[in-house]
Length: 256
Image 1 (cartoon, helix red, strand yellow):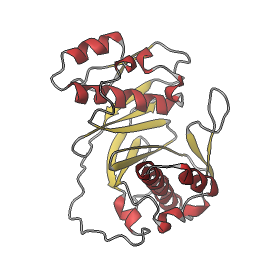
Image 2 (cartoon, rainbow, N blue to C red; image 1 turned 90 degrees about the vertical axis):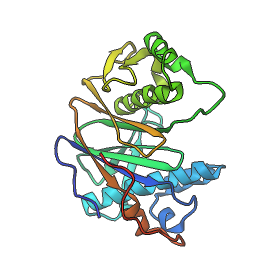
Image 3 (cartoon, helix red, strand yellow; image 1 turned 180 degrees about the horizontal axis):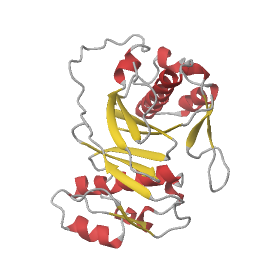
Image 4 (cartoon, rainbow, N blue to C red; image 1 turned 30 degrees about the horizontal axis):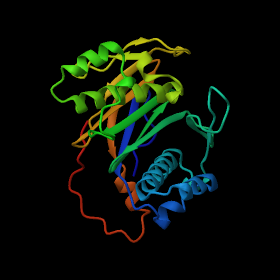
């Protein structure tokens, strides 16, 4: 059960472990376009993460708005070119709720707020290749990273903050992350400079999230900072999933 619409000035952050990639109960929640995209994933991990993120988003919104999860209609339009690959928004029913989705490794996270543009990101603290992609950092950030004791964890802290910002603005990677400078990994999250076009219309705010062990995460908001509350999304998925033995959980491993 959800906690209702987010209170003004707050953000609900819902966490769930990535589910089975082809669970029929969760697939039944998806719209035609979502199922079509789900079928295009050739690897099980990508398919599972996509399904979990879409299902969790629909279930939370459905409980918030009192409508069937399968009846929600989303739209994504790129702010640069007008193509169907921009930041997703809820079109039907009309609602003041905004949301953002991220997933990495075994975890999926969805953030919800009212009348505030938001962006969320989570990343497993691990290398994706042989080296860190330092081209994503501004010169001052690279200098800080060089002196860091755990360079991978420090890079993930930088990256999640930048990715959250670019999701909140809707720019995505059309803006070079190196054109954005944020505070150092051991400092409170904040934007220091935005040397790219377009500049955000409203002042961005950043918050580092409490995450599962071995992960880093951040939330970005435009116009005002939000108070974050954490929620167990697996209880919602458990109500829908089929053919999965769900272990009893006395505690959820994330606390704000």
